[in-house]
Length: 430
Image 1 (cartoon, rainbow, N blue to C red):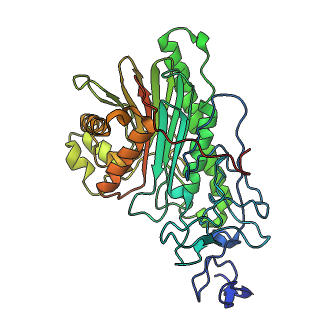
Image 2 (image 1 turned 135 degrees about the vertical axis):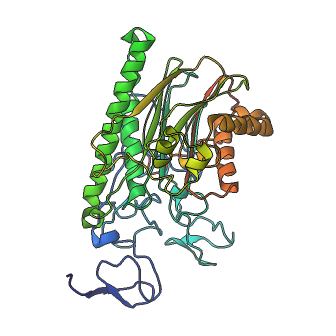
Image 3 (image 1 turned 90 degrees about the vertical axis):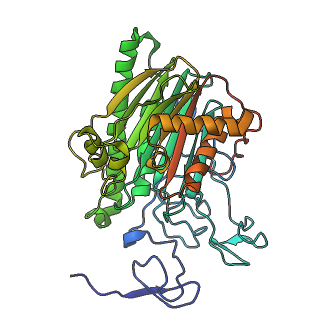
């Protein structure tokens, strides 16, 4: 049994008594910004690792992260719109739990309202129409190099974006790239924080290029598989850190997420996954076979292995129940499924969450969708940021029932004209 609620302060909007530990006012629904869920303030900070391949740049109005989730207190006046449950700058000296800041996080206090266009956002709400300011986590993009890009989007049905994306790449096409996607498990605590911490921890492990002196292709693949296993372990540790920070709130349903990553080195891609987020190789040539490179850990995959047709298995009850995941309650064996492919012809390496593949699960069907989208976009069809956004739009138009993440690496000609410029540096930039 727990003690009954006691009042410790008043609501800054309506003056009503404030219940200790509450995250919003019972009288006017004002969201308090100085108390984290569970009443335990905590925070996370960002800082790019030294060395390795440059991290992604963000589009304007986007956020891309470079940090591990290390608890700190946010200095007054330096609050970031990546804060969990962000409603505007903190107006007190109290600390609060935050997601890691992105290096390109924009200063959005006073920005024009996107709903009415007449007012401006003050303390998280429009001063004219009262609309709540959008959370930048709802939609962000990363572009570490012209040939690699990704989009992460909330979709249409979920109240928050539990997917996360982290990319890195060398400047030369096909030289070196890292694409990591994690999908937070919706019924677990702080899954959106866990997925973001996991992708960043994995990217930090994977971003250092493999040694060129490893010898044969077989040796290169073996080295990449070991690196992917290390990345899974690092991502799992990051999720455990989030669990510890969540405290008692995470006891019943601890944070958890899926994992998929592609490591590209010298024209070879090696993929590793745990859970049901996927990677595909989709050649430009319609006569070249498309490949699903990942292997689902799910009830649907088990049914297909037993002979059930894909469509029936993936639409059956419990189809999306996963059998392996990252988190403190995960199965003991987290060795990733791995597969390598030679990027010997023009095409697309695609890493995505089920928010996309729900609508085109089969590799051949997804290849056809990409071909049709490329043709419709014209020259921009060879622009990775444009294609990633177009595939995200497709999933939203098809229903957007889940968060959507699309990461692409282009093999072949790349069209870069008209690509959005990187966001300007801000005071949050290291």
